[in-house]
Image (cartoon, rainbow, N blue to C red; front, side, top):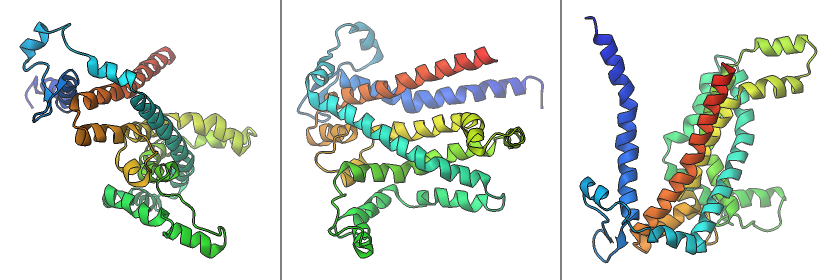
Length: 300
C-alpha cells in the first residue's frame, strides 16, 4: 500500500457517519420543519410552502409563521397525547427491563454451547413481520381469545376479561415487541463482565445478593441505559400497537400524528407536532450523553 493511502481512507471513513446522518436525519428534519412553518391549503400537497429554496430561508428569517406551534399549545389534545405517550413508554420500558434483565442474565450465564441457541430464541420473533405479530395478540387478548379460554379452563376467572382495546393491551404489545431490544444490550454487557470479581467478592464473604448490587448491576449499567433508550424512544412514537390493541381512549402522539396527516390532512400542524416530539426525545438524550462524557473524562 502506498504511503498516504491509509490516512486518506481513515479520513473518508470518519466522514461516512456524518454523511449518513445528514442524508437520513438532517434532510428529512429540514423537510418536516419546512412543512411545519407553512400554511394549510386545499391542494396537493395540502400546504402552502413557507420557502422554496435555501436563498429564501435567509431572506425570510424572522418572517416565518409559528402559528402551528402556537396551536399545539392551545389545544390540550396534543399536550395530553405527549404526556400519555411518555407515560406509556416509560412504564413499558420499566416492565421490559424487569423481564429482560433476568432473561439476559440467564443467557449470559449459560454454557457457551447453549448461548447461540438461547440468543436465536430471543431474536426469533424478528423473523416474522411486526404487523403479523401484533395482529396475533388480537386473537390472544380478545374476550373469546386464547388467554381468556385458558384462564376459564383453569378456573382462574369466571367470565372473560376485557383486555383488548385497553392500555393493558398496549403495554403487553410494546413489552413483547421490544423485549429483544432490551435483552441484547444487557446480554452484551453481562457477557463481558469479569466473573473473577464475583469470585473475589465471594472469597471476601459477600453474599450473592450483595455481589449483585455492588458488582453485577453497576457493571451492567451501560447495557441498561442502551436497552432502555432502544425501547423508550420508539415506544413514545409507536402507532401500530396502540392503533390495533388500544381502544378509543388510548391516546398516543403516534396515533394523533396519523390522524392529522391522513384524516384531517393538516400537514403543517402534524409536522409541528413531530418536530416537538423529536426535540422532547433528542435534547434530553444529548444532554445525558454530554454529562456522561464529562463524568468519564473526570474519572479518566
